[in-house]
Amino acid sequence: MRQAHHQISVPTPGRGMYEITQEIRLWVRSSGVHSGMLTVFMRHTSASLMIQENADPSVQADLERFLARLVPDGDSIFQHRQEGKDDMAAHVRTALTQTHLSIPVVDGAPVLGTWQGIFVYEHRYESRSRNVMLHLIGE
Amino acid sequence: MRQAHHQISVPTPGRGMYEITQEIRLWVRSSGVHSGMLTVFMRHTSASLMIQENADPSVQADLERFLARLVPDGDSIFQHRQEGKDDMAAHVRTALTQTHLSIPVVDGAPVLGTWQGIFVYEHRYESRSRNVMLHLIGE
Amino acid sequence: MRQAHHQISVPTPGRGMYEITQEIRLWVRSSGVHSGMLTVFMRHTSASLMIQENADPSVQADLERFLARLVPDGDSIFQHRQEGKDDMAAHVRTALTQTHLSIPVVDGAPVLGTWQGIFVYEHRYESRSRNVMLHLIGE
Image (tube, rainbow over all chains, first blue to last red; front, side):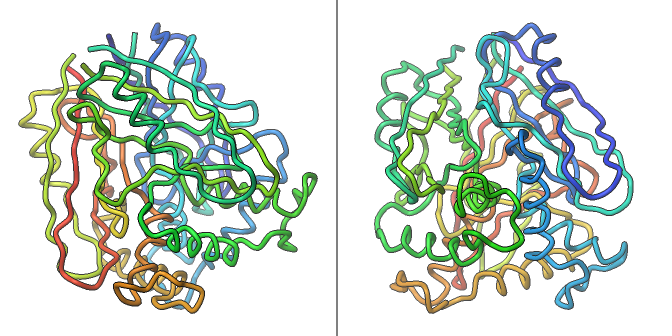
């Protein structure tokens, strides 16, 4: 049994979903761990992680429209506004989605279903770079 | 230290919650891992996983009523409608709940609290079968 | 490779967020596992876990205002009311947040970002004590 850690930096030029499935698949393959458990961890509180359909881009657009309506930017109930009207909305969106993902690994690859992709969900307007830590344990 | 993988197929005859606690407990017990970490992973993007109270069935009915109101089927903001009005609503419900669960294992069983059950939450109307991957690592 | 389990009991005097980052950091340090994976698991269905900003307390207040509006206590669609109007709302809030967290450990500490804290989110009004199981695997 062995393990590996690897931090990746994901550029996020504005609010939206950025797929990182391929980058993660390549790292898992290169790690030498054939069978085990992969964890993906977002080191921020205004961006999150999501597993979603990666075939039809309208799914991502619809998700964004839904979240924008559910968590209005600059909502009058928000007091935390130092960094703009997307600031607190980003924290709420993060709370309602995922900060970490755990995915079993079989035959050298995460066991994602046919339509499942791994995404960084950037909730802030401005261009950023997000630190995501990967961990793999297995044999 | 050792690990085990096992895929189960869960029949889901329509939208709703289907408890899989007992099936998972039996597999953990049969795995020979007495102490460790269990991960449950849903290989789909229109069904999810949830740990919830399994004593009073009204909890499940209330959760469903809440989600049906929060994420209206056929919402006019949804463009992804190929498979019907429950299609995009199912993706949003999945995004707001869980695609994976991690549960410590002690004395040969997941350390669920007294009222905690593990459920597959089917978000589509039609009858399906959902692939759920189990992974256990420990000793 | 080795592992450790540890259950902590978190007093929660009413609805709100209670930070447990420091208690978890100390246990990780004392465990002797320098590099690996930490899992935090809430053994209840009316309290949850959350990683959120721990610098500005207005983030926690805003999150609470948002959830209180999204999931009204005593909502007329709820039938599960045995324990009061916060009962079913607490189950829904738990379903929309997290029952478990997985955080990689590097150099003897969870790899939390600068502003990330680990919180127990109590969703019931009354004072309680919540059981949280910690698990660490690594070397």
